[in-house]
Image (cartoon, rainbow, N blue to C red; front, side, top):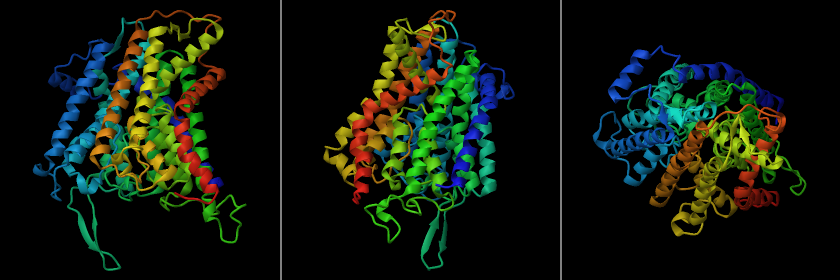
Length: 571
């Protein structure tokens, strides 16, 4: 670890803090309808779609619109991918995507997961990348933001279970937040060297005389929205480690900043909408503490390196450091600090873009991205998903606090009763069940084991990471696992749908139940949700829920591998 590395992490953290207030205020104005500079376009979209943006929808109608919209867009993407070989903007003549892979990809991009079991430059045409994958990068992000806003409305007002208008929220998030932000970021990426063209792939001869093909395409535009919308994925198989996607340390910073910008700002939006700004900052603080702990462990583990590779002449029995750190799987232009930071950011925010190979991290370094994912999109999280994910944890926290003092739990003046806790627990239990059941199945059936390229605890980590990543709608891959099989395409695709929609509906129900309640003034017995004690209790609930469910699996995977590495054994 170096002073320079810590200063870069500190600078990034300050920028994330700095964007929270101005962007949070802008988000409030977007979703209350005050921002209107694209009003003619907005009205035209409503008119074409036959939507009344003034309708205040009950939570059931809001959820129905979300499910129907997502199902229709997923079906459209599946059809286009299956017909890819017959469609234009395909200069390489790429064939149709196989049915199993088209299903997984359509499900993955619809759910803001962007898990890819294929190499983008050799599988997807320009048309598929632009009209389907990039389209979902926008609309899946806008849907997540809309649901978060609906949840906050449920907390903030009494409206007979009504949460706003799904169609208006989705359109406004796209038009006024994601589109302008993506245009600005794409121009910056192009200025720094990211490519943006429709050229055919370039064949060239290397200095050694070998033939090499350089993939081309509209990269910068897709790169911008994949980061700003916390989508992840990559135009190229190497993702954000590819110099055409992420050419310089400066673009690397802006990509990380774009990932955290909206999730950070939504905490300020929460405080402003519920008229309790200190509560918004308390949520931000809890998220940041989890993030800081993760990046600290990841940076320490990667800078420490593998003792088996310690400097020649040191006694392996006593050596605990590798002076060069662990550079395996990392880009030299980013180094250890920015690789550890990027890995933490992308998994904390449920993004899935990577600038290094997580499979090549040390066991504890790889443990951090895995734990970030398994915390359930609460460490800033995906756009929208991070906010409503941690708010469910807040509901559980105030419920526990109420039980501790023998009072009916209250959250911002609204009583938390049986049905609210039931919906929160359903949300919490679906997530580990989907991950652990499919992981357990995959380590015993031949089809699951056939995908492994590593065995022992590292192989378990690869399988556990894959199902954690897809269920949490993260999309990053530990790598080392061959996921392009019928078995994995099917199960991973199903898990993306479970992790998105089976968790969203109970959350919207919870928001609707809260919206039906009267607000009562705080009393002496009300548990304050702005104090350091609240932050500590919230962190405890988050960590304990994850520790109770995932610790046994983590103990058999990365923790055992770390102990074995210390004893001189690799897997």
